[in-house]
Image (cartoon, helix red, strand yellow):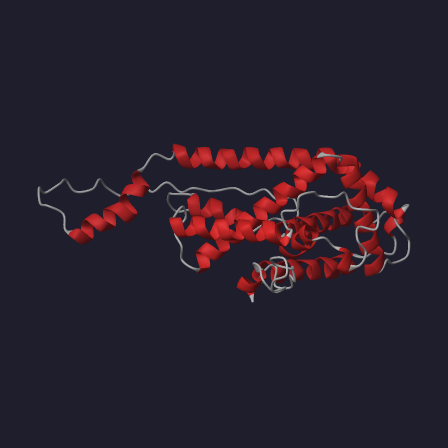
Length: 288
């Protein structure tokens, strides 16, 4: 509930508070209705403090509300479009998961089983994507490098678009090429998807260590899938599942997501750095 304009801060807060089940979010705006009209101008030059107050507080509240409403409408359309895309691909995802797990097991699966299924799923998806897989990986790598560049610039209080910011970007770009993160060729993963950590190429280890947004999206999808189970707990297929058990699993995932969001990505990265150089070199040192 808002007691005045502008709406930017309230809209920005949505991204910091993701919903883990279907919700209906509404911005309730209370239009101020003063008791009487303001006093007429007295002809005096306003003081510095009065001018500063008008610029920071009064003028923004008197701006037209159209821009704020247009921003809310754009946010709604983006959310609906994303939800449509997710629901459209869900049947193929369910089919792929069923193929790599050979049907969901009735007994509990361990971490090793889930890791093996995830590796097989990733390898299968990559093979089906074909040449588009390399473009997808390179785009992810470039976006992560951009995120790290902004992180370092923020830590060093470097203005965006400055010469110093450009040098940071150039240094990270050079490091990524020298270390093998920007590999000349992105090979399709085998079904095992490099089961041993030592088999991971530099670009794959970099993705696993630094792509926090990917991990967060994956955890949120799992949490949303758990929420779907509450509605079918009476089904005989889920006779051994209770709401309390779902609550415990979901709380553990939410805690993991919260801790990972507050933590620092890449702290465990052990890339090779420049060829023949220090293996601890790279963005992970900023975190440590």
